[in-house]
Image (cartoon, rainbow, N blue to C red; front, side, top):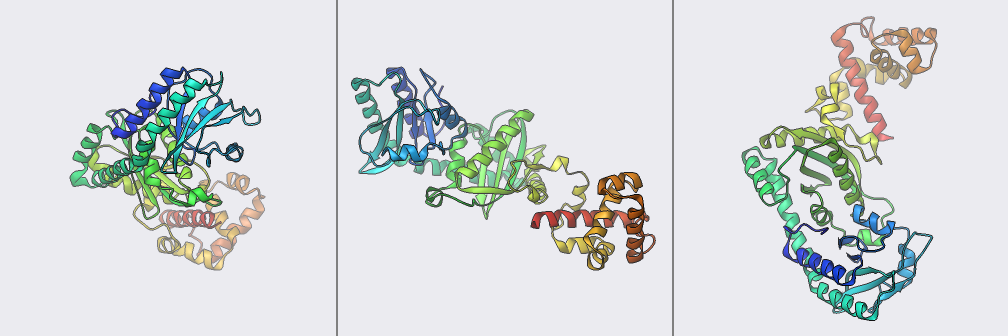
Length: 403
C-alpha cells in the first residue's frame, strides 16, 4: 500500500510510483529516506522486514540508536551503493543503501533489504530508480512548502468566523480534512528541544514536517510565534490519541518540544475561533505537565473554566481574592496548602487530615491561625471562600509551573 496519498503533490506521487514499481520488480521492500534518515515513502511489505523499518513507517523518525553505526559505514559520504551487514544489536536485517545525489548534493537514500542478497541485475535496476528519484527529491521541499502554505492559509481562514465554513469545505474538497468526525482544535506551545543535534539546528522546518505527516492523517496546521495550532476531524476517541502522538513526534523530529498543550471541540466551523481560544486557555493550564504528551482538554477543565478569558498569572490571583493576596503575603506555604486541602475536602476534617497527612489537632491549629490572619468568616462565607479557593488553586498551578 502506498505510504503517500495519491491526491498529494504530483512529484510525491511520482516518487511513490517509482518505489512501488521497484518493489514489484525486485519482489522486496523498498524505502526512501531524506538526508536526515526520516522516511519519505515506502512500498508495501514484500519479503523480510525488521522492527527498525516498522518503527520508521509508524513514527516517520530516524532510527536513532543505529545511526552512528550506519554513518560509520559511509552511507552519507559514498557516491556508490553501500552494503550494510545485519546487526543483531539493533535487530537490523542486512541492507543495501543507494545514496541519492544530484550534482554531488546528498538528497536522500534508497534502501533495499539484502536478504536474500540483491543480484547485480537488481542492483542496476535500483540504481536507475535512485537516479530517477534525484530530480524529484530536489524539488520535493518546494512542493511540500506549497502544501504547508496551503494548510496555514486554510487554518487562518477556518478560525475566522466569516470565512470558516468556506475554508473547512475547501479543506475537505482538497483532502486536507476528512469528511467524517467532529472538528477538533489543538494548540501547543513549543520551544527548541534541549540537546538538539546539529541536523536539528540546520534547516529543520516544522511546517514542512507537518505537511509531510498530513498525508497520513489529514489536518490543517499553522506554526507562528512559538505556537502550533491544528484543526482536524476526529471520529473516535482512539483517533485523538493517534493524532496527538503524531503531533508530538513531528514536533520532536523538527527539534522542538511541547511545553503546554490544549484541545477543544468545535460544534460547527464558525465555532472554530472560540474553540481555538479555549484550547489555548486549556494549554495554559497544562504547563506543569512539561515533558508529557497529554493535551489538556477544555471539556475536562471543570471549575477552571471560571477563569476563561483572564490571564493565568500572579496578578489574577490577587485580583480574584484579597484574602488570597493577604494569606500569600503574611502566611506560609503550609497555610495556603491547608486552605486548598480543607476546601477541596468540603471542609471535612478527616478527609483534610488524610490529604495533608496530619493530625486533627494540627489541622485545627492551622485553621485557627488562618482565621486570625483573614478573619473568622474567611473559610465559611460561601462567596468569599469560593474566590479564595479559586485564587489559591491558581497560585498552586503557577507555583508548579515555575518549578
